[in-house]
Amino acid sequence: MIIKPRTRGFICTTAHPAGCARQVQEQIEYVKSKPAVKGPRNVLVIGASTGYGLSARIVAAFGAGANTIGVYRDGGSVKGRTASAGWYNSAAFEQAAQEAGLKSFSVIGDAFTNELKADTVEAIRKEFGKVDMVIYSVAAPRRTDPNTGETYTSTLKPIGETYTNKTVNFHTGEVSEISIEPATPEEIEATVRVMGGDDWKSWIDALSAGDVLTDDVVTVAFSYIGSNITQAIYRQGSIGQAKDHLEATARQMNEELGSKGGKAYVAVCKALVTQSSSAIPVVPLYMSALYKVMKEKGIHEGCIEQMYRMFADRLYNGGDTPVDEKDRLRLDDWEMRDDVQSEVSTIWNQLTTDNVYELTDLEGYRKEFFQLFGFETDGVDYEADLDPDVKVPNAKY
Image (cartoon, rainbow, N blue to C red; front, side, top):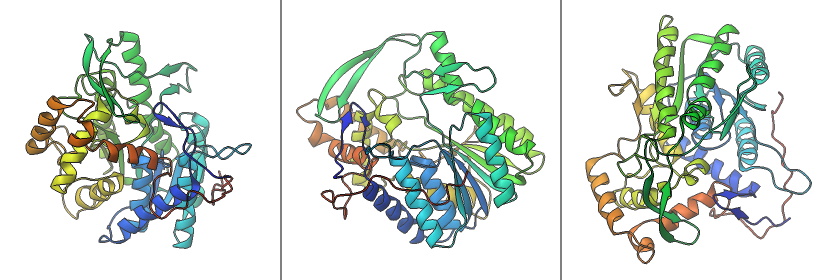
């Protein structure tokens, strides 16, 4: 079939296998062009098929030469429909790892379940013995608690009062005003249950109980703070409560892991185009302005640059790990520079539908959105007739 993008709001319902493979290869080539990382040897990545999880796995494997196990839920092609982008990404990663002589495996299923955790423990025990790094990069809109059976759904809402600000339809370029009603206490609690630290800790507890963690294990989960423009909808909103819980969980796990020499970190990353961020009102418009400023200053980064910096400059730099006053890894340091935020604010105050393409990098944002699904990537023939049914090598569990 000839595969074209089909969109529904902030979701693309198709994915391109050759485009996804090309983008994975570009990330691998970037890492191989950089100095090697003296990092972990055996790495578990939970949420390994897209975004930071995929990039962290690539840096671990092709930067540090580590063995990796990737956990993800993505599905393959069914009845002539394309597989998910994450599936194609993982297939490309596994193929490249195999060709490079790196040991890697995929564990496919719902990361929230106790059964998948147990399967992963057994896979680690059989293949690696133990892991010395655990990356947690799960981003899901809902979660079923495996112990109670209750399903929680997250919300992206402000807290306390209605929030009104500019937003953009990044497909059409229309800038408009949006008002979002505040979250209820029940919605806030549900968001914490989905996007807080509960499942991360459950994973570490299961891995510890299974005796598949080294004493000096390092585990990392991801967060975001952002600028004053997005504070009400993000860090001070329902999702911000979840991120506060995530950080509190890291402090709790530090006490438990630290007695043996382990460490838990929350890495605060820069704003990047993801399926999740595309769904948050206001954020795509802010990011379009941010991208223009950071690109002009030569300090723009994508997922792979952020993850390489996390490994090489923060976690495995040969010395102390630099953290902020809350023990967080700050990879958003360039985004939050005073000069960057000042220029973004100036742009923000002027934005209208008429000038959005002139004042921001909305076109770059839109292109990166489609690249999440393997489209609009240089060097790919999008008129080629492709089989959407791609197998994932080493998907043994």
